[in-house]
Amino acid sequence: MTRAINWLFTAVAVLLLVSQSFAEEKSVTYSGKLWDRSTLSGDWGGTRNDLAVKGVTFDASWTEIWQGVTNGGNNFKEEGWQYGGRGNLTINVDSQKLGLWPGGFLTVEVEGNVGSDINGQPGAIMPVNSNQVYPTPPIVNSDNLNVPEVAIMQFFSYYVGMVVGKLDTTSGDANEFAHGKGDVQFFNLALNINPVTLLVSPYSTLGAGLIILPTKDPDAALVTLSAIQSVGKASTVGDWSDDQVTYAGEARVRTDFFGLTGHQLIGGEYSNKDFTSLDQSLRFIIQNGEIQMKSNSWSAYYNFDQYVYETKKGSGRGIGIFGRYGISDGNPNPINHFFSLGLGGKGVIPGRPYDGFGIGYYYIDVSNPTFTTSLATRSLLRDEYGVEAYYNYALTQWMKLTEDIQFIRPSQKDFFTGLTRENLNNATVFGVRLQAIF
Image 1 (cartoon, rainbow, N blue to C red):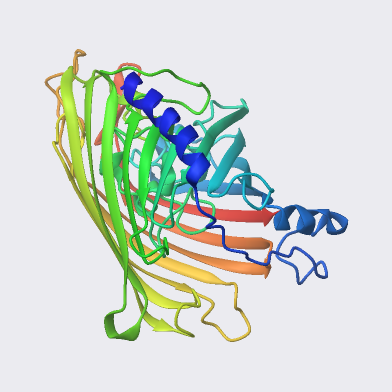
Image 2 (cartoon, rainbow, N blue to C red):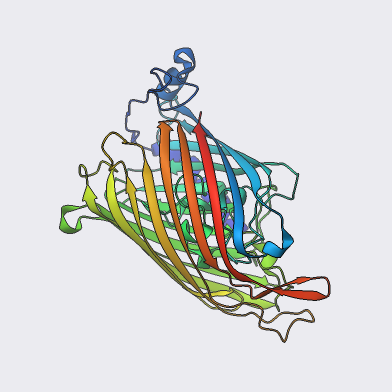
């Protein structure tokens, strides 16, 4: 693995000398009146527009969520509503626009969260507040500030490129109506990404990948092949280990069924890591014990999105359907099968071009792992399913207010508090989200 990475760096250095000019000129402007422009801070007296022309952009946002379990789950704990906020700053640099070599791109992401969340209260294996999972799940009253991505991408032609560095893996499994970190569309992690991938793909980890654009347009067709470390955290740099590697491949293609925009995606992963505990993936919430050691893990997944109505083809506004399916080895991965289905919409209400909405259902076929604690003989988990609905109300282009409701049948059947065990009932979760784009 180390030799492969060294070769990759060498290849990048050599091919930089023969790269063509591929950067597409796109006009970017942050100007406008306060209530009409795309960002709160505007164009910084023209400096931001000038930097964008030179290939340097700054994308910043702040998202805060108030959320509470109003019925069921661990409501006997009486923790009430919780507040949490997450800030994200992404810096992108285009080397050609900056007057350097062609085809090069640098991405640096800085991310932090404050406050707390209710992810442990419903008893669900899936977090009901994705926004607080990143960059690392908060400990009550502690703040986290990390750098989850520092990535260098180099295209050698219009069709082929490579990326290397510390990578943010949430860019995979993209979906028009159900994707992100809980800051734009759905709150629940199960409706933002396929959870069968979570065990072997840490959120932030060292890695390298090959990028193939069969038609030059990344939205028309995109193929990625990558090797990443199976263990990684946003809070650490990490190091390479040949016996903790995840190999992944994914392909996404744009479709034109019935003259309407859609996408089809397939992917798969394999890891050679020895898995000894589910806590290696902080996006799972299993509160009882460690699992028995198991070598290697694999998963395969599929997703689609399809507009059924578009205000204008390719405009990104309309109503559509989406779905995901995933399958894994079932041991050590606690998710044997997974599927989700839903409906989403953007900008379909007259006079409300920036509003959005969604409703989705997910089902997880849980495979009970063998635990190494005194609870080893107990079946602690059961199949989990849930429904979520949200509506994004755009106060301006740069500020959105969201109301959200979830109904969850949690995977964990009971919860241990000292020497007693409490039954977990179906949970009702309400939430409000406010996002500002700077």
